[in-house]
Image (tube, rainbow, N blue to C red; front, side):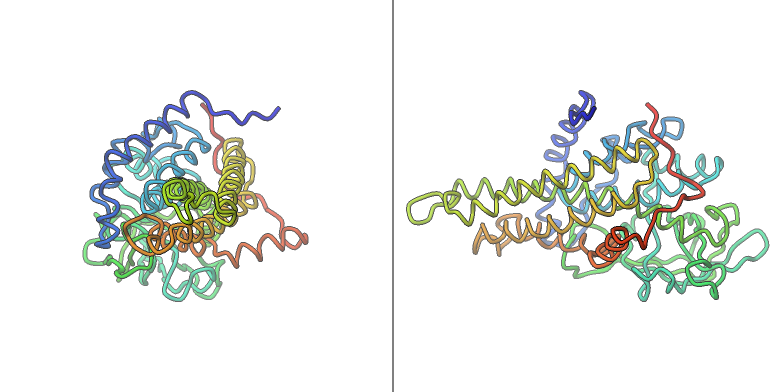
Length: 398
């Protein structure tokens, strides 16, 4: 039996999140986008809403809700603005789920609990100036020194870089071993002092209302007790985190498609040319119809991935497909939305230019379009198969 209906708690939560975002955050989006500054108190507002620990068990201060519900919330966040969903992706999908999946009980108590409760904002330090899709090219190092590791290196294109208090950072404990020499570490900004420096990236093409930046480590001593997993296990940890992050990106991109659709329908019904609403013109009808199909398909793909996560089924392939399809579809929907708005779409009077700038980023990050095509071609040809991880994401239990 297949049941596509949402439960009453899910419907109520979606409605409350939508109303809260419209009242508390949406009024600041256009200004922050224009000024290229982060939305004020965004994380505190999401924490007050009760969604920053949504999928984590209540025993760790989380909401005890499932991954499908997380996807629904991420859809609403990106409908409001991509920067909100990006914050949720790194805080929950990358940093939080990484600690939940791979951490010891002591690590979960010390680090997951403040993330889940909204006391601390988490971020993910993987990408470097010369290492993105090629994770094995990471140059940051972690040298063992007694009960500590000494971290040196830098990270770039890190969401929430200047605002986060906890970072899940990847560095090489064996520089000669490529990606097999990577290890993962929980870095606490409060304990780092002058050995951790963060900075913001200015003049971005998109996600201008979000905090994107970089990190620099210099002789940063991190207790060995804050290593996540075993030495050399960092690559597997990073890939599992990206599975979770991609799920939230796919759900968010679906929300962006809906935002494009709603804006386009409204404008197409209001704007007239040649004596008729432009929605009556066939090429406009085609673009809006394509948005409708893309939204439904993207939503079904991320809901399937969420269902698999709830059941603790390996979902790397399904989640990556949802991310690839939804992000490409959102980029196309935003481009069409701008076209529908004509010259007005090229201005900031309407939100569709922001939609297009924001949509383009998701095609690149957390697995670029090109990487996804290679991966799914290899799956189809039988060159790639999912292998069990040492530590799977625990199933959702109500």
